[in-house]
Image (cartoon, rainbow, N blue to C red):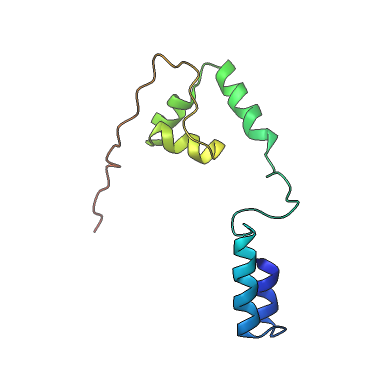
Length: 105
C-alpha cells in the first residue's frame, strides 16, 4: 500500500491507476498484512525490566498504581496485547481514577 501511495505522490501513476491499485490491494488483504511480511520486533529490555522488578517484589499493578493508570492501560502500553495476569483467581479490573488536576492561575 505504501508503494502505491508513493507512486501517486510522485506522479508516476494517475488517480485512476491509483484507485484501481488500491482496490486490488484491498481485495488481496494488503490493508492489514503484507505479503511475506516479517514479525514485529520485540525489545528484550522490557522483559528484563519486568523480571527484575518482579524479583524485587514490584508487580505491574504496583507500577500502574504509582503511575495512577489502570492496569489494563499499563499492560497495553508495555505488551501491546491486553491484560497480563499471573493469577486468574485474584484479578479484579482497576477502576478509572481521577487524575487530580488543579487549576493554576
